[in-house]
Image (cartoon, rainbow, N blue to C red; front, side, top):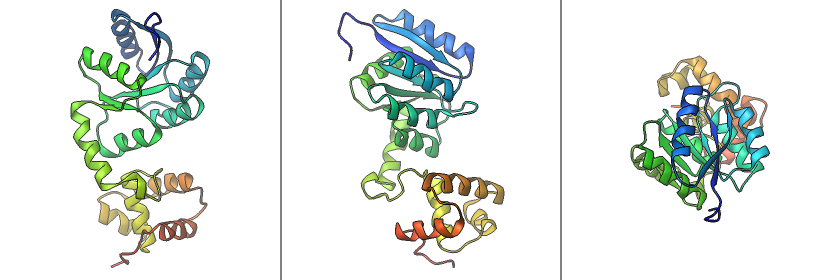
Length: 221
């Protein structure tokens, strides 16, 4: 936390100007906070954080060009002293899990009470990890199912891991879609993300990585 005589500096990241304006007005109504920058997409977010080196970032997830997950990953890597607090409408497991894997220290849902946002900002800057009431139980369940210490693919979301497991079992996209309840095009999109994250160029290489990591052992039946 900054010294008592200095404000806690914050950069606001959201693609909706009205949301940013509301957050700015809210933070400026608190004692000890100063908004030092804003951005409407992830690419600009990284630049703003590198320029201002704030104590904290309030980060939206769903944004054009570079989303909040990738922006968080880049910010944590470039400015490890800046704490990222996600404030998003998204509450599904994949998004929450991905945000925490990217390095966010907190996750609140939009609609959180004013005092909750104030408390969360102070907490993440102090090095704590904090979740809103609607997120905490889900996160605990996620980490029980996917413990980081034994996870050979921490960069993958739970859904991407499921897809990779079925690929490693020898299933094609249509069959994977039937198993997981998604369209083959969605499976293909997940595979593109998996290839990029694992830094492999094709399905065969992904299968090798998956099997080396212990996936695909259930067979294709």
